[in-house]
Image 1 (cartoon, rainbow, N blue to C red):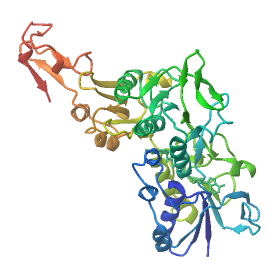
Image 2: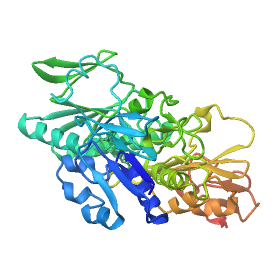
Image 3: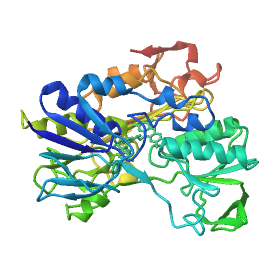
Image 4: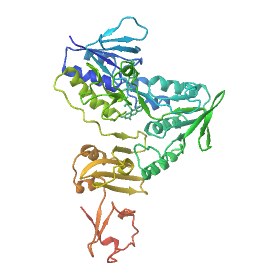
Length: 449
Ligand SMILES: Cc1cc2nc3c(=O)[nH]c(=O)nc-3n(C[C@H](O)[C@H](O)[C@H](O)COP(=O)(O)OP(=O)(O)OC[C@H]3O[C@@H](n4cnc5c(N)ncnc54)[C@H](O)[C@@H]3O)c2cc1C
C-alpha cells in the first residue's frame, strides 16, 4: 500500500491529504506537525489575542474528522531531516526514521523580521511576531502580565492592520508603522491608501507612514521604537508583521532547488523524485503566494500528482486579498496598479469610481478587454462580479453596471458626462451645474444604461 507522508498540517497539507483521500481509499496518509493543534485557521489569530474567539473556535477539523478520513496525524513532532535516497524522514528527538513512498512538503512560512536593532534579541520579551496559536497566547499573556499600555505594530499590510484592530480592542494605545508612504502597499494605490488611512485613524489607531524602523528602544524592557528620520514612538510591546518567508530549510538541506521558496513545476513536483511541495513554502514561475486560495488550489493539484491519476497543471493563482476588519469593506484582486509594475503600455485601461464623500473607491484594471484586477473599497456588491470575471474578457456595459459607473447624456445637445473620466461623480455636481456645451440644466441629463 502506498504511503504518503505530509510535513505540515496547515491548510495546504491538510487539504492535500483530504483530496488524496477523496480519490483513493487505500493510500496510507500520515501528517507530521511541529505544532500541537489539529488544523486551525490562522485568519482569526488576532482575535485570539483580544479573546474574541477561543482556540476551539478556530480549530477547523477535530480529531473525529481525521478518524473518518483515515488520516493519521502526529502532533508536536518536528521533522528534522529527509533522506531522499532511503525515502525516510527523521523526527526530532526520535531514533526511528519514518518511511514514505511519496513525500509532500507543506511547511508553510514564517514571519519576516527586518534588520532592526534589538528585534531578534527581544523576541518573546516585548517583541513578538504572529503566526500561530502559541504566538497569540504569548502576546495575550504578555499584555496582561506586564501592564502594557502602548503598542506599536511594525507593518501596515493586511496582517498588521488586522492585528492593530484587535490590539486596539485590548484597549491599548495603538500605532501602526509602515515603511512605504501608504498603507497596504501591496494591495492599494496611493489614492485608496489615503482613504483607508483616514478610516483606520477614525478607529483611534495612529498611523505613521514613510517610517523605516531602525531600533527597538530597550531599557530593561521594551520602551519604544526609533525611526530612521529621528521619530521616536513609545511602546511597551512591539509586534512585527512585516511580511513572510517561506520555510525552506528542510528542502535546502537536501539540495532541492530553492529560491525564495521551494521551486516546483506545474505538477508541484520538486527537483527530487517523489518529493512534492505545496502551499506558502513553494515558488512557481518566480512567484510565491502566502494566501489561502492559492493553498487550496495547489492542494488539489498536488493530490492528483501524488496519485499519478490524471495530472492537473497549476497555472498560478490570481492574488486576492480582503481586509478583515469589521466596518471596512476592502478587497484587492490581481493587478491593481499597472503604473506601479512597469506594465504601462498599449492596451491597459483603468476605470475608476471615486466617491470621496461616501468613502468609496472602485478601480478596475483592464487589458485588451480582459479584467486584470480591481480595488473595491467601501462596497461589497461588485466583488462577485470581479471574482467571476478575473482574467476573462468582459463587456464594458456589464462592468460599468457592476461598479455603478455611469455615462450621463445631455437631453439638449447629447454631450456625455462620463463618471469614469471626471474628478467628481455626476451625482455630486451641484444642482445649478450646467452642461458645459449647451448650458442645459443638470436635470436634463439622463443616465445611459
Ligand atoms: C494572522 C494571519 C492571518 C491571515 N489571514 C489570511 C486571510 O485572511 N486570507 C488568506 O488568504 N490568508 C491569510 N493568512 C495566510 C494563510 O494563513 C497562509 O497562506 C496559510 O496558512 C498557508 O498555509 P500552509 O499550509 O502553506 O502553511 P502554514 O499554515 O504555515 O502551515 C505549515 C505548518 O507546517 C509546520 N511545519 C513547518 N516545518 C515543519 C517541520 N520541519 N516539521 C513539522 N511541521 C513543520 C508549521 O509549524 C505549520 O504548522 C493569514 C496568516 C496569518 C498568520
